[in-house]
Image 1 (spheres, protein in one colour):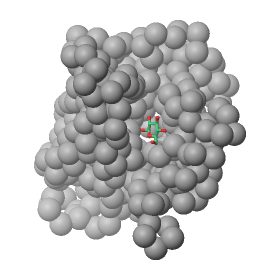
Image 2 (cartoon, protein in one colour):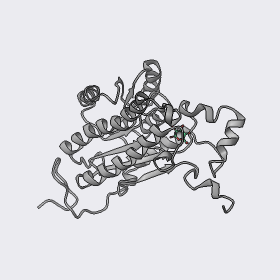
Image 3 (cartoon, rainbow, N blue to C red):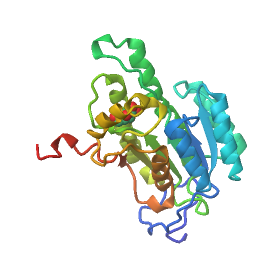
Image 4 (tube, protein in one colour):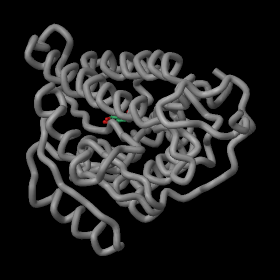
Amino acid sequence: MAAANEMTSGEFPEAVMPSCETREVLVGQKALVTGASSGIGRAVALALARAGADVVINYSSSPEAAEEVAAEIRGLGRRVLAHQADVSQEDQVHAMFQRMFTEFGTIDILVNNAGLQKDAPFDEMTLADWQLVLNVNLTGQFLCAREAVREFKRRGVVREVSCAAGKIISMSSVHEVIPWAGHVNYAASKGGVMMMTKSIAQEVAPYRIRVNSIAPGAIRTPINKDAWSTPEALKELYKLIPYRRIGEPDEIGRAAVWLASDASDYVNGITLFVDGGMTLYPGFETGG
Ligand code: BGC
């Protein structure tokens, strides 16, 4: 009979298992980060590579920026691949995963990061604005997560690599819980990401697949440049952040490394808020 802590690839894991030993780095793991040519995705890709992972850099429209990230990762001695794909298109997502499997063999970590904003007052929001944001932010995460889960279930746990059969990290936002006037499509997409992530987590946890979200607050990236590029804007922004500073992309990178590593092996289905307290109802700071 197999010892309690042994699992054969592809088998449904035993119900009673000893806790997983801590292995904090990602050496030998294969990661795919969507939307990795800039902003948070770029920082996450670099952080995973620094922790030892080989990385596929997905990008939609900036090959030069993606190649810069790839070059930096290559410089760290990791394997890297830059791949163009629109994550909202099923055939392109499928082709991207197939290429990753051909070149890297498998996937251990998916960071579903690609996302965009298309802001408008609600009564002026076009159906195209609505659909673009939902297609990329929510459907894109669905399509990539589905490919990853198929591979995780097929392959099962490889104990020399990780205690889990695979890890998915969904990039959500504080706006999975904070309503956002003028950004109804974006907030709806992130609310969807929250429930999709938790539901996938519940369904695939028995296969030793971990699915968690990171919910960044205001992070210094191109998507919200208007909120931090002038002293006046920053002053306004700080009213929303009890910790009184903007976040840096690498702070999300470090959170992603932890969620991808065996150090968080018993963490499944959570949203990790990395927001300087933005979700703490800052309007009540003075007692309300
Ligand atoms: C948005 C940013 C915004 C932040 C906090 C993020 O999800 O993309 O534009 O600054 O939430 O409101």
